[in-house]
Length: 199
Image (cartoon, rainbow, N blue to C red):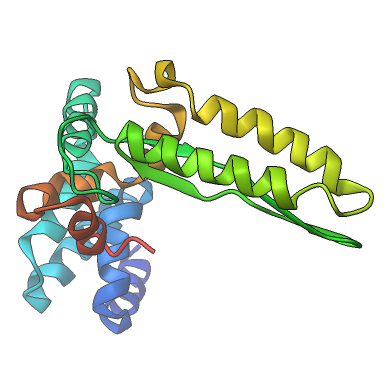
């Protein structure tokens, strides 16, 4: 056990600060108690941000459902990153853009995070693009264009944005612990995502 602890301590010593940050923000919940202790010591020895240690502690304790809900509400209260308006809560939806070029068809499914009006504007743009450019590939152009029309029409629905969408929850759920320790410092959503090194 002592040899394992020493090997782990040496391993953490050679990791970059970015790797230590990733462990603290995203992987500490999967570490053994011994590994958590060594990680916290390494964070302290390097003089890294207290947010790293807070993230590790939160992983160990876990997030209550009420805390998750509160964090998601705080995220949705940021101004829209697309239009900078803060009149409506942020949400998320995928739109589907199909383009065909005779013998091949491309499908792009970007996730749009913004206010409902900006999401709907992007869905409308995707709907028009796919309607004009999606049909012309054989054999997949017409099939994928039809699918895209259904998805984009759903994204245009106002009813969809009364509550956080599945896409919103799915996008932010893996980042909640990192967000918890960084959200107070963030002025907007882009700043928050940048602070947790989201890529």
